[in-house]
Image 1 (tube, rainbow over the protein chains, first blue to last red):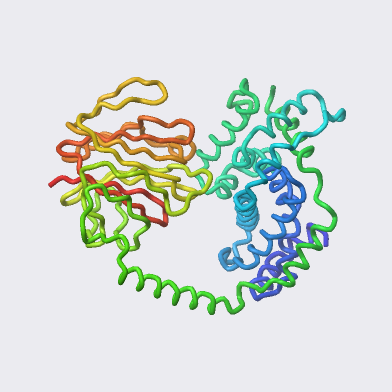
Image 2: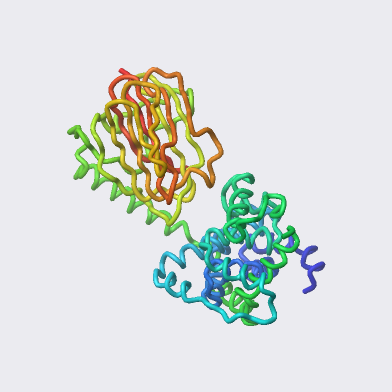
Length: 179
Length: 244
């Protein structure tokens, strides 16, 4: 299904999903699976666990669909928020995951420049909660208001979290360089 | 480094970290959704069962009364989430209920929050004055902090951490509130030094906000007697300062 077609069909899909049609819900969240996976992979630093988290979050979202009250405009932030929560739960439930994450170390990949490699290392040193606003704002390109909704904070608090995490990666960054 | 450079390099780093999802992910999600019951299913049965269990539990607790709150303790622990007290809005007088803990004038031992996630954030400090007490409400996002200690003291001089500098607040006695597992800079945007003008609680000032520990100094006019308890929705720690 093309993205244009999907956009046109979203209201109908939402109605069908609300009526209990799991296939419609799957189609509705289909475009969100890739960003959800990226978010989970960055938070968990484990690709297998990230896919598990997205799958589990999708089921939880399906069960909580009534919370959305048919608001398609909030679908993305609502779903990504559930994914982020699922990642937090995964980390809590699997305490050994912390050790596992600490072992994440990749080879110096020649296809990336030195700057990217440094940032990659710096990214790994951040806590998952610090990585979350960075991936939402810079990678998924979400506006501050949407980042704030996912983090359950005010837009100004979201902005300061993004800036603080960015500064932890590159201490010489100014606010103008980040935003 | 420009914004665009930073963004590009960060995105490269994230790409490297995440890779691409496996082609099977979509099918996995679809098939798991097909097998999962929808929210429109018979969840009311589970809800009714949970309500019955909750009622039974409350009944057992009322009969057993394990906290024995009828006997005031000089250093009673901070009560867990209580459904009865009215949330304190600044300047609004709530109706006190008999289930509120008794006022004490001694330190309370460290008490663990009802639920302790990895990180919580203070997002609001609010004060209010009511008949018989002044109230400080410390509101949290992302759950309750891991532990809270409340320590009354003679005088209003506190030591800032980690600087070691001392600060003297308004009032004649003080209370030091030590909260572990939270911070006062991520979600909070208000003042760090609140002068209330009330008769009991006269000043609230940040003493520490470092490494997941927040200490608040409270300047009290009169004896430093208080009660403290957690409320939920939103999660908040309430400290009432006795004024009469």
